[in-house]
Structure formats: structure tokens, C-alpha cells
Length: 371
Image 1: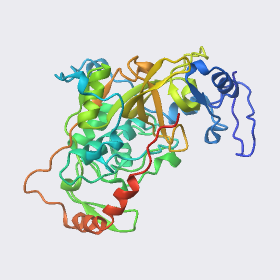
Image 2: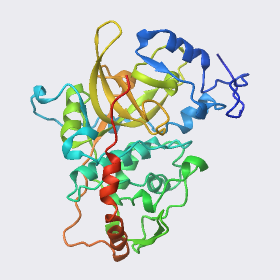
Image 3: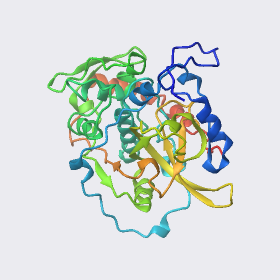
Image 4: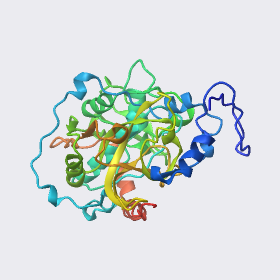
């Protein structure tokens, strides 16, 4: 169905369609739900009403596929016994990482999955690998505002650019550099300028003003590519934490509600775009014909109202939607010996430490995957 989507109120059930395709396609949703062989069900999300497919491809995704120099990077080679890997795994449920894995985020209408997937993957690695063992939320807005000097970070970006920024400059935590571009659809002014050696004055979400120096920023080591083999990805995830992956998004993916996603091929349109996400684990389930279906557990960045509480499952071991074609990990950058955090930020962190125990408790929510 070709259509032009006009803005409609939430109470209107039908979209006015003329010449351009809508992001919500009711006939596509019906076709998916009619055929159980696809293995997943679709939903008509009200937050997508009145939006064009072009808008979704531009502002709900936002990752450029890496150039040849990046994709030809040699993956890390590991020697291990595949039998040590469990049949199912969820990083959120690993006892040693309890309460450390970050929640699903929401990029809103800003094509910045390149920043969101990088920040969330890096945050998980920092929490797991740092001596503090404290869950952090790295500022996506910091990367969007500062990652490109002459480009709007809401109109897509490159993963290597995001990781390079984390490596060279580091970023603030989101509570002192909160996300705003989801509603403005554009980047803001960089509040942690690259060349400035003086502390950056930021106002945190609780109203506290802090002065952040370079040593207060959280950085990462250079990223490394993980081989595109199912078990290599599993091994990395199991031992080192969540990984970042690129995937090709087709029209049907926007409507995903539950189940193990696979591209249906119901639309012959070649209008696709790339997205980046965070893989948290894997599992298996029995299909409608008694067959075993292997899947990845993946965190999207469209909020918890989408999919399975913000997550989706996708076929594992088949490079479905290119999900296994380019997978990345990184190690947290250790703080240099003898370098202390600036006084203002250290004071702020001490005030936050009082609440850390309750925050960790809230993080231990129920993780049962919907079936």
C-alpha cells in the first residue's frame, strides 16, 4: 500500500494516505499476524501513527554501515571450548553482573542509534569491568553534540566516530548531560568542547551544578571487532558483557511486538536502512512445527513500550537482517594512577553514593522473555 501520512490525533484509528508510504501499514500487520510460520507477531503502535516510512528510516535508526577499511578489520581470535557455553544466557541475570546492565533507552525521533548503542554498550562494559562495580548511564547527548563538528548527530552517524570520541575525550554521565534531541530532532551545542582544558560547568538533573574536568569523563579503549560466528559472539558476550551490533531494518521490523523476528519478505520494497543495537544474550524456543528456534536477546532504543519491554528476539546463527555481520566490543579505559577526580564532581558522586544501593535494587526487575 503506497500512502501519504498526514498527522493524526491519537484517537483516530485510520491514517489519511495518498502518495507516500506510512510507517504503520495495517495490511502488513494483518498479513504477519495471519501466518504463524513467521514466528512473531506485529502490533499497530500509536506512537508511529501519522508518520511516514521515510521519517522512520531517518529518525528511528541512524547508523551508517561502516566503510571497507572498518569492515575489513581483523576480528579478535579466541581459543575456547564451545561446550562451555550454556544453551541460554541473559547478561542481566548473571550473578556477578547483577544490577549492572543498563535498561532500555529511547532515542525518540532522532537518528542517533549510532550514539545510543555505543553509549549503552560502553556503559555496561564500564560497570562490569571497573573496580567500582557501579551501573552508569553514559550521556548519549554528549556524543551526539560533540561527536561531529559540522554534522547533525540526529541525521545518522558512524560507530567508529562514536567509539573514537569515547577513546579520545570520554563522556559525562547522563544525569549531568541529559538527553534532549529526541524531541528537538537536532543536536545541541557541545558542552564539553574538545580543546578546552578548563573544567566544564554542567547542571545535573537534580539541580546540582558540577565542574567536570577531563579526568572526570568516562572513556573507553579502542573497540575491537568480534568474528561473525555465532559461538564467537556468544563467548564474548558471556565473558565480557553485552556487545554492539549493526542490523539492516526492513519495513516489517517497526511493527514487531513479540516472538523471534525474521524478515518476512512481504514487501518487495528495497527501502531499508541500518540500525545499531545492543545484544544482551541468547536462547532457544520450540517453533510451531516442533523445531528448535535459536535467537539473540537484543535491546533496542525505542523505549519500553515497543517490542518485548523494549527488547526483541531475532533468529540466531543465520545472520538474520545482517545482525551478525559487524559486532563490536570494547574495554573500559582504566583511570590513570594518581589522577583524582575534580573536587566538584567528587562531591556530587559522594552525594549520589547514598542512593546507590536502592538504585541497584530497582535494577533487579523481572527479566522473563515473553513468549
